[in-house]
Image (tube, rainbow, N blue to C red; front, side):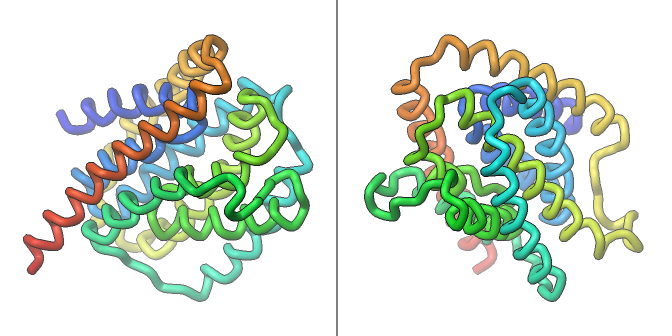
Length: 249
């Protein structure tokens, strides 16, 4: 029953991501962490998001800014090398705390950091920091958005390029959490194989539906609704984290 409910969440969150380029991943990570062990939630989230972001990137491929992708990949590769020497196993309380804090990045003043993913150094820094946070918290959409808010890209270019970058980050997350569990498959408590088989077409369908909604959304409302959604999620996750820490104490 839980697996079927999660499939519904996969479709809904893929649709949300298809519209805003993020938020959906934040919603999905919170739902998965609620019913799965942290490592299993990270692996499942990463696998679903690779398909979701990959399908979204293919759907809007004509809008992808490949120069940004190359710089992002360089930064992502650098942090991946460092992560190979790190052991990290967060509790659910810490995961929800990080999930609750990450949305705060969406409210940073535009002129505070002056970051622009279209600039070579900034694009590489984006890959390094976003991939690192993705592994630590499971999601990094609001941080990724900080690097795109000052670009001169259209909403379609933002969604397409961000989707392509996240294929890298989620692949790193799957490898980071999955590799140590290869010999402990019985203990991972991953969803059944058919969940992933059904999740793939649902994420693609969500990307298509989200893309159609995106076509009808103005650039102003695109930014406004993104901030409101991720902020609401952040508040919910901070409350969840507080409850988990209280129970642990």
